[in-house]
Image (cartoon, rainbow, N blue to C red; front, side):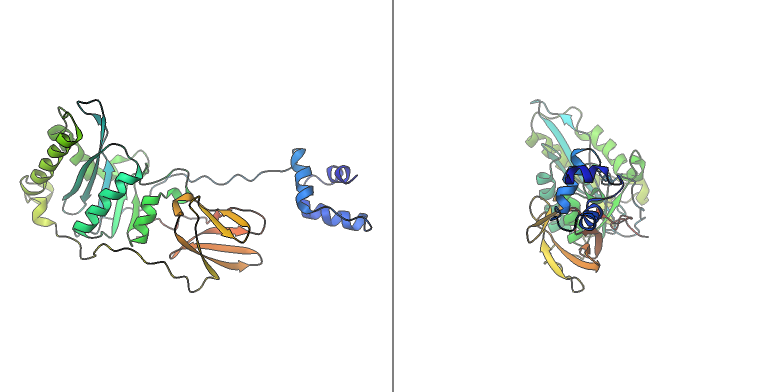
Length: 317
């Protein structure tokens, strides 16, 4: 009887409203839980599922740095095959203002592990930049994660580094890096070396010549090494963020969830191990924040965080 009543109710009604109607129509019968009514509706195809808005990469505002370390640029130059038939993926990092080549490291893949190691070494040697500009590809970004973030970019945010992203299909927005890649390709990859050790030796030699022996027209004939100076911001291990205006601080699980009692609320795996703050801003509606950035909201019904309207990590000039 209950199932028939549910199906004959207004099809636009949700489970709570139908349950309230049952209580009024049949006060002597114990009403089913709203979840049971929802299951009946779902079983008969009467539940409209809300699709989570997928993040679409659009790029951010781009700065024009006037001093070293205000902006670094990073990218993976196109992979190529070594003589031993293994692919080499060169990761390059440059300083925008001075064109100084901070790193050119041949890696076996574009996975986060190798990328983390290279950036940590560069941060220890040269300090921290104010911002890093990349494209929207992995491991710098993640097309299916909240706001296109990746674990790498979340780490940069924790270090106080702003994120700049070029528009998809517009490599010219990272033009200085692209021109360096052309020079790198012609002088250090043709022909390719037999193995990684030999190829890295050629990359290291290229870095030395590019920085300290090759005049640059954009620098009025100076060497990048004559213009670049290391950053005054030293590399550090960030402390747990403080959230003085939030109700509680929660550590995100390794699978990217916020656990509150028995509830498991999906956030994003790119925040795994990070501490976020939550605050109730309306009746049973909570705001989720990461550092000074507001990520999104969740309520008592949906076990997922719905993102805020605008990308909070986009550079504001």
